[in-house]
Length: 338
Image (cartoon, rainbow, N blue to C red; front, side, top):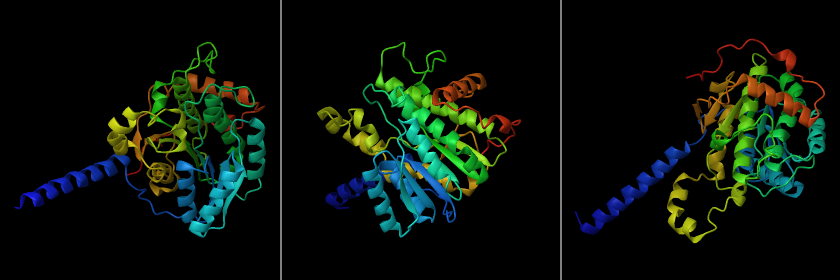
């Protein structure tokens, strides 16, 4: 064999193998082709990145998609683009600021006017931002990533129950494993602010919320699961400092290319949880991509999850707990259909 041809052959094999490896690591496309006609979906943080890609795909499948965003200019622009690209006129923009309980309540009142609500995807997040407070005085990452979605989900529960079977999807992160919550200091006011650990704690709270909510909604027809979409090239990481130095760009660049997913790739797990027929009735699970994983033992703590729930209810000003009468003995509904 000509030595030049051999070199090109070897190079092609290496490149092809690397691409295949990257596709494997990223989990591939959502395997389900299920349509969403007649179903209404709410997606928080849907004007950019992963949320926008989720919205576009579910609109392509015929769903009525409500983009819930803080920045209405970007939200309206995203909705127009999705309507144009999918030819689905049922894509609408609604104002939702998860750092404001008043905004969340106003948004929930608007959703009450919808005929139904079949999928709620709690996707929006802030990550490692400088120390700041929400409108209601809570640490920003804890307030937006957890408390805001806690309040939103509770306000929409009656709609989800009336529309059952319905699904709640909490977009999480592997960072939850490093999150340590102090029941006596949930906002970590007694320790110096650390943006990385604050993010991890907010994700741990979200996982405990998923576990507790799935327990309360057992046998109601409403399922709730958490999903890690993987590391994605999106605006979420703007405070992390990645690629801001020559070392990260030049030395770690090839590694980042291999493991960092595009927003479209990172959207696939949430799409899968929203549409897959195989996941009908599956609740209280954590998905790493599209693969179910065991929860960290710290999450499966009935006392801590119930304590967090009750404390959060007081934080957000919910006068009553509309899940209390729904709690029934758990059944074995935690194994994914094969």
